Image 1 (cartoon, rainbow, N blue to C red):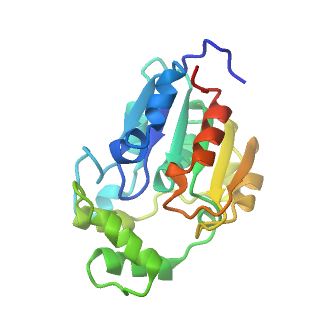
Image 2: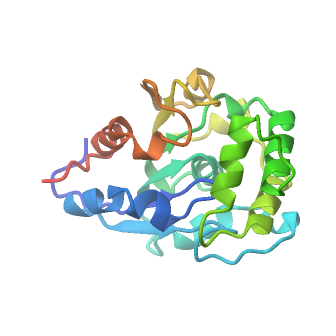
Length: 235
């Protein structure tokens, strides 16, 4: 574990429909990191928060740009925490910039890294566009997120339609050597994450009991596991 005087910055990246402020600041996670003496790097992905919000899916082909632009200029590796789309974006960044990260906490991803669910994505897009099935609970929740204050539903729909520039397969992931903790709830639609953990050379897994996808960042067990892994227990 890191030394007590560790001041390695921690980058925090939100999921789809969220932002740095709503995902990491509002629940007090960033305050806990700062209490442990860790500088925080906040990232709003394209289409979210304070970032530009284009309506063309092609604009979102490389979501890693905002992460790469926020990396320290001195080239020293940092720690990072990502949820859902933010976790996928961090993982993609790590495949292309293998020296960027020391430790990664990846929450809310699992089997979806390898298994595409085009039917689910199509239903979510329909819901975000206002044409969804009200009986489909997951799609309805995504639509609610899109409608939150400060969000641009058309931009968020475009994010979901993005072309996939990088596919994360076993060969690509085998080159990611930083320490990684994968955290997923057992009620999450991306559960389990065993295949992802096994594909990463230096990863371990944590299962949150009775936690679904959307509740993950708010879970006390998530917060405790992430802070312990990063060696960022507040004093």
